[in-house]
Amino acid sequence: MSSAHAARLWGFCGLRLETEFSNHIRQRNCRILQIPTEELQHWFETEVPDTVKQPSIYARNFLEFCSYQALHLVTAHPDYLSDKEFRRLTYDMMLAWEAPSVENEPLNTEIASCSTQEMEGEDGWSLFYSSSTKTAVQVDDMVSIVLYQSCVLILQAVSPHSCHSVHQVDNKKTVGPEAFARIAPACAVIADIITVHNLFDALTSSSSHRLHFLIYDKYLRMLEKVIKAVKNARGTQSASNLQLAEGEFTLDVDGTVPTQPVLQHVGISAWPGRLTLTNYALYFESLGVGLYEKAVRYDLAMDMKQVIRPDLTGPLGARLFDKAVMYKSTSIPEPVFLEFPEFKGNSRRDYWLYACLEILHVHRFIRKYNLKGIQQSEALARAILGIFRYRAAREAFQILSSHYKTLLCFNLAESLPGGDMILETLSSRLVLLNASTSQRGSVGLLSAKEGMKFPVSVLTLHRHGILGKGEDDDGEAIYAGVDVCAGEISTLETVVKKSQLNMGRAEAAQATVEQVKVEGIDTNLAVMKFLCFIPLHFYLLQELLFPLVESFNRLQVLASWKDPWKSTAFLVSIGYTIFR
Image 1: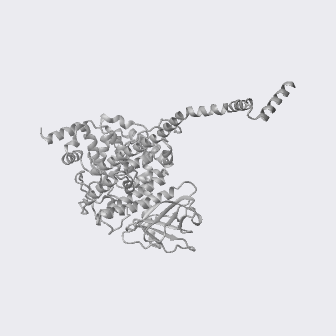
Image 2: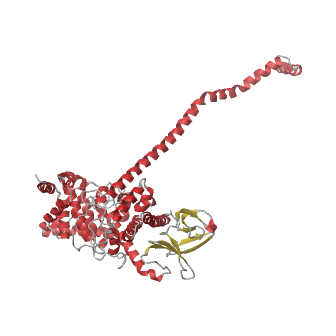
């Protein structure tokens, strides 16, 4: 049997095992692409290797292929994050990925464990799955769900056959980590392949490691707000005192609200002002009489031996409060401390600390591998998108700061064992970038072996309006793939998994060492107690018998008449006592 006949046979068997919901998602993707299923299946069988087309995995891999192509086309349009249908579509893709065929359909019915404070409606489905889900639930979410279900019931009453195109919102279905890791990175703004598992852990930290749609939906809506805020700041930055270089733009601003000031400490002096982070530097503008003074620039791009770390600050140089970021470089005579006062915790400080470190680390990465042109822009854009995701997760769910740094890919590479391999693999993929354009509307597959041909992160920033015309503009380019490809695992993903595995082993080894240390201390104490058992008890017995022994010795001295006067006095005293 030829390979072509075998592929068609595998495809026939694989699609016959496809679930109804997976078939529904595949048809939605075909409508988006405006391509018949047969033609899309032919492309799939032509492009991917035979190992991806085995009957047992055919349905899932073909679903990945269809989903990736549809997402590549949908994300070419601006403001797709604000589209409710897009948010629901990507989540449904994850649900379908978990149960693409009848063999693993039970995976799709897994329900997130509810907390003891969950509330259930009359039909039994839970509104609140965890504390983080409670944060995500809004009135408009519940109204949308009720309206959506009402529309489905109306459609079922009017035309039962037309309901196959509408998927009812099932709030008991949740998404697992593998489905999220395979679908989310296909849209560069939603997740990065390096940090996708850490992002999932952050979003599901209080929901039994399962992602509810309300959490996912709120994360994307907050991500859209963050991008709009950055876009608006770009339009108003000319009103400030900043003199930004070409290609430099604002990522975040703090200190503009009187209740949340930013204080700059230099020596024993401190002054409030406005702090601005760009893709190349930090700017601090001291607050004067109603106006901001000229901005002081703290470079993050050039090699100036910069050191950025958390530190303590206080009035008159006292080290009292752990709410500051210390910046030191060869360009300034003494370290500068930027304090972020707040009543509870130090989340503001942590956010700015890790965001600044991400920009610093990406520029070190660019210098180390001598990246130029579009490769440099793509690396910077990747770090910028990571900061957007980091900020969105923080503002949407107030996630603990321990999760923050793991959402930034260059910070993560600096902290993981073997992180240099991640950076080396990433640099090799950036070298493959090709800024040439392709015809709009073309649909193709990028295999893991070919690498990344288009600046995905740069295109994402351009399509969201962060990068303007002339700034790494690719014209009308359509990118064919990112760090994920149907049925295959890219080299970058493999290296990341290996580094995370090494990190887990290192943490387990460290925990074992700490446990051995504690157990060793306990053992040593037990041995010491055992060795000291006999001498200790002998000493205690000797102390108890000391008065008797001393009295017996004194009687012996008196009986020996070594001191006649004492012996005579003792006998007179004893005789007088007896006589009385």
